[in-house]
Amino acid sequence: MLSNRNDGPRRPTASRRQIAMLAVGLLAGSAGMSIAQDGPAGITEPVVFAPFDPAAPSCNAPAGLEKVLAFARDNEREFVLGADHGLAMAAKARGLGFQLDGARFANAVASTGASPADLTWRAGVEVLSFGFVKNGGMNAEALIFFDPRHAEQARVLRKRSGHLLSKGRFLAAQLLAMLNGGVWLGNARAANAAAQLLAKAAAGRLVYPVQANELFVRMTPEEAAAIRAQGFDFYDWAPGEVRLVTSWDQDLDAVAALAKAIEAL
Image 1 (cartoon, helix red, strand yellow):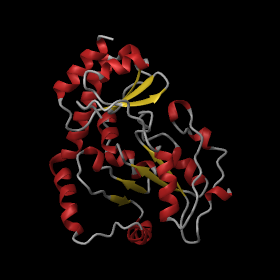
Image 2 (image 1 turned 60 degrees about the horizontal axis):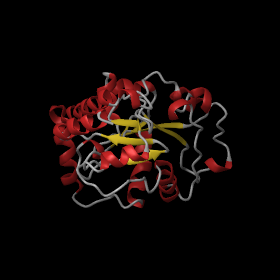
Image 3 (image 1 turned 90 degrees about the horizontal axis):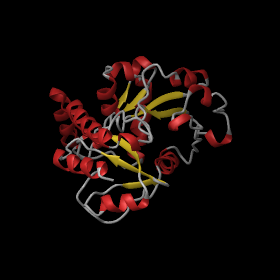
């Protein structure tokens, strides 16, 4: 996230994979999770997924719980996967359910111009976490079950994880406000547009094409320090690489200032 704070280099304290593994163990009675090998740019291609064995001990789930393949349309390396990516067929061929992590689902919809239906149930997705919190929501999320058979199991897991809240309808009000009038999509478009402004300034430094609201930019430690000295805050991602994320309510003056600073490196 861009900000005017200057607290020194930021580094992720836990990877998305580590958090996911902890969550699986909590919610699924100590079930394990196996990570499919990444293809180019962090994309799990169907051909890479081919050797994956859902019967392996690391994938065993307690009786009654289904095994699933979970993926994101906008992955950790910022590549947006289209509706025809093929992972759904690969999952179904192995008897796996298919769940879409919608953390940046709105950004993917805005980037591709595809309909939400094309990126979800028409592409074989059975469960979607909509992704409100990273797109302007305060503290609520929605799970959408395109196959109603999965919903009853989710009720049990919701209670087990401590998410069965009293007066939940008051939290749900923010979701209705975002859906009415297309606010959720407008927020995503704003974040994506801000990222494109930075992408133009960092054109010669981009590690990957910018397809949503994240940028991976090549910077030496000295260059990153010079940018931070001007009040900008971001993660060191890999050696010689930083990650910038623009938000739904990004101050465009701050974006322009950062773009100017990057161009001056």
